[in-house]
Image 1 (tube, rainbow, N blue to C red):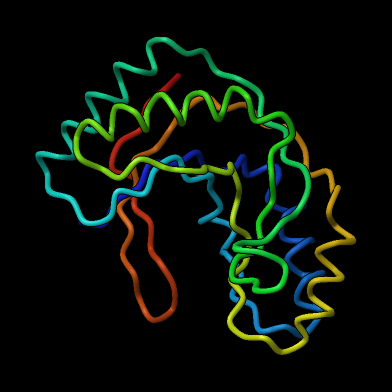
Image 2 (image 1 turned 120 degrees about the vertical axis):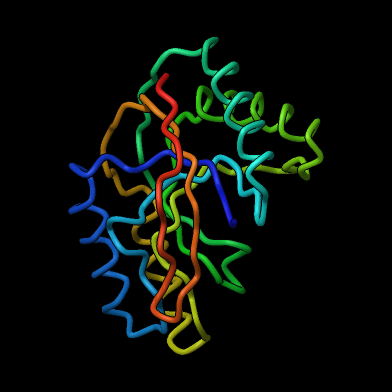
Length: 182
């Protein structure tokens, strides 16, 4: 089963994100937008794992979250991976990601003990589109730069969700496996 740990985006912010996605589509660049119901911040992508590993991940996550309280998350700004000269992913960022990054780092250390690859340089981000080619790349880059400091809004991180990911020809299908409340 293909699994990852994430924070779902507050649905109240989805319309602002969809507006940005529509602005990006006006560039006529070859983009695959992330569906509003799939918008999330990934804490850890595990890949293919078995039920025993899911139980261990669940135990670790529940134990670590006992040391945390819910915290605000301010979504602000755009960026790309891997870099502006070769864009594959368009994302929204987090203003002051201290709490988010600390929780991700604490969990990642524990997951590394299970044998999962430790993140080298983790950038908290919300993927909003995947770039599928170079057509109108300059126009897309210009639009992303114009949106560099865009304010989306604030939400509270109150839970993490372990999700199953099924890849299909029309896009991924995510199914919640377990919710972890902070």
